[in-house]
Length: 258
Image (cartoon, rainbow, N blue to C red; front, side):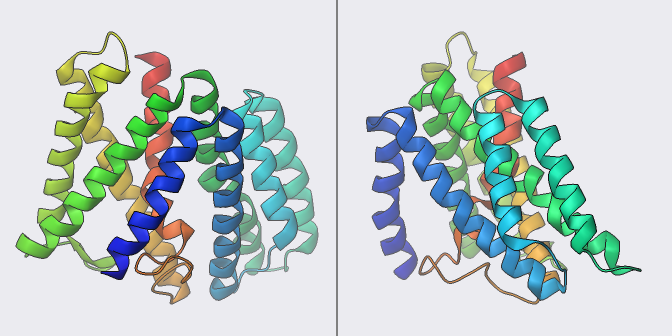
């Protein structure tokens, strides 16, 4: 029940902000998500034992996201990566821990900054409908995976990483994503055929599952169940957007090159 109530409280805020307000509101929403996810990521790195320049990492991720959002990708990302690399090398420990510290500092540029920047860019250039299509596909799939796994789940998908995920739940999610994208996608993205849109739905769900497992691996390595307890019944910001972080780049590439 807590999980449902939290979703009912958050969904109108997120969806309403994207649909009813100008792109700047989506930028603010993305910034809040980025800060929350960034702080949770730093908590994971501390649990791993990595030493990172925390405040600078969050700022660098925000700069990377802005660079992607406003289509100055190469220059912005290159400059941000260079500065963060120099600082992380200067603050990192020597010996075996050097690689861990530097990798932990640079990973969020790609893991958090790029996907969140892509969402803002899509809102600016393609409109609210396209962003909501992506969000809705992931949400429909996540819901199908959760309840499909609870009702019929017997075989674990990745027991060493996420014991609660089942193969049956994944199939439910893939089917739900394909059906939803096949139905709604052609209404939102002009010129797209139903089968093509359904295939993209399968791709997005597969990427989302990979994103979920990736974050689960991070949490398992850090010895944590959730990235935080910010959202009752759901964990933290990272726990809610883990699928989206992997699906957004795939969705963007499809829109750009389809």
